[in-house]
Image (cartoon, rainbow, N blue to C red; front, top):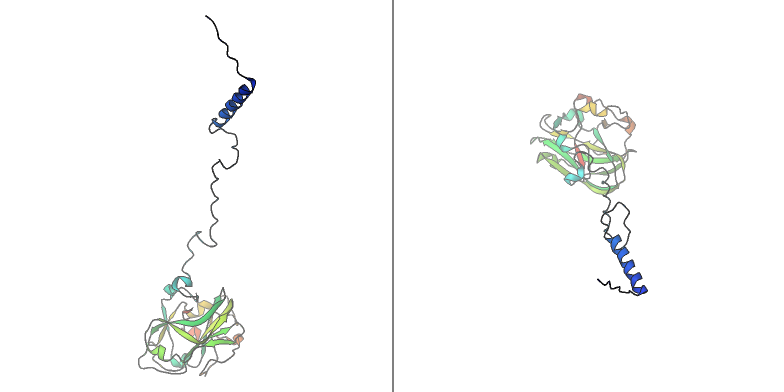
Length: 243
């Protein structure tokens, strides 16, 4: 038997050898070594986005923004208590409820939870207003006596002039005057009077009264004179919201 030998040019042999080496590398499968980077490799999976601040880590409870409001003294779902007081007890007094703003807002309305009305009441010179931490009146409503005679619901009462409210402490002021039945004109409340002031002293009481004999909200008040004497008789802290 005769053996036939075929001669391959040197250049072609070198090219074939190089091709076999490359074919072996690309066909090595999913080895343990690192894969070269480049346009032919699969893109790495993106890192998961960090959680939003305060979100997804548990139940945070309702926020005013959930109900198209800007701030409130407490969740209205918890305002189940109804507070009433006689005209002799609160007539002409300025009743203050503290509220803390965490961001700058334009304050246009004070929402009040009117729980019950007295159809036979004779009301006049009733107002809502907002004092800042220095005791300066920032804004107030017109006489709200007509709104206290109808529709026992939560209702917005417009400030005569909206104002820019920076973050900080404010006091919503209620002034009532006239004659009404004690257990007929009532308001929704988020606290049981004296207990809301736990740990606090003037001028930072969360709920208090000031002055007597007022027929309009004064331009300034001395918050160091905050009193709880009327609060302790059962005039529980009203619920308010801001829009």
